[in-house]
Image 1 (cartoon, rainbow, N blue to C red):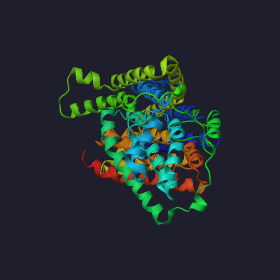
Image 2 (image 1 turned 120 degrees about the vertical axis):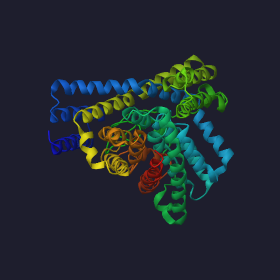
Image 3 (image 1 turned 180 degrees about the vertical axis):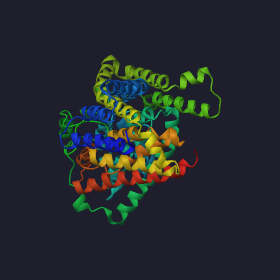
Image 4 (image 1 turned 90 degrees about the horizontal axis):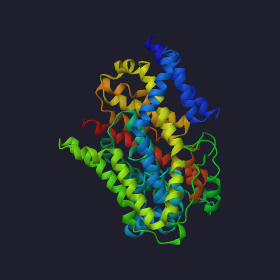
Length: 474
């Protein structure tokens, strides 16, 4: 096929996927599979090879990241069951005080708490943020809302073990330790700078209390009932366009049975150990200090399994067998669509690669390494505006342009971070995160457009601007 035909067929398949999701309200999983089938046939792979490529791409990603997502979600579910998040936010408030809480909470959500399903994390932490906002002062609501939105969305696609980050690493064949280190290097300054920019704007007239806040937020019990009835597409980082999706999360009131729960350090120690093992493996590899033992324990599957077992032990000791059973059941329920969506993103990437798009795009980018990163960011941003899901747009953008990375000599981790950064742009009314932040934090729709849509878009641009100089280190 000619270059024009390959480019046109790829663009047509992506547009068709967007139309199916946006206009026809077809589940993203089904839409991506149909788009992959159409692309394979248009690129003349043939019926047999198209199906084979789709299934192989699906299986390869599941083998790469399936256990990691499952382990991360299960750890998050157990932390939720123990009421650890509520106590962590309370501890942050006491240690850092109201003035610094937006920074500390956003950083904690964007780094340490990414094993927790987004909707669950938001519903747990939003009432606590609303309470803290009263102590901050007149600008407490916008500062807390913006900091939560920035931390939640950045963590999904820039920080291990965020589900989008795991998917990007798998699609682009990036070692998870490498993704963790470079993602941490990018996400921390992105969050700090973005929260600082929004704080400056709020203090200089960007927030109107009369028009941007409502007297009282929607009661938590009402939100809990809404979340129990899924509407549209409940995927991490975005919902079905035009309908505020609900992810099926429950709003816990702390550890079951009214107990105080285990020490906060004990709750999070297994997760921290797992992340340190993964990061340690990446450092050892860079320093040429690897050996069989280090490689084994720093393998992401082994490291997260150790974290999961440790979290399970802590949960069992504090809540008993019934608490563990509840957490595991909820974790499996939450991880199902995440796993399938990630895997079909791998199917699309495999078909795109088989069609030869990488060889075509190589000729356009071979003179400049910055241009591919800008292109990945832009593709992910456009897809997110159209589809309304951070995760779907990041996975799709990475799948489209992953074949370009090896030919250009651009490190795949840069492509992954660029796709993640672009997918943050313009979180708007098609996202369940938007509506949950609007209702739980007592904002009008106009207020949520400022604290969520604008604030996360600022983070998206900041991440890109930080990524370009980082790319010079490779």
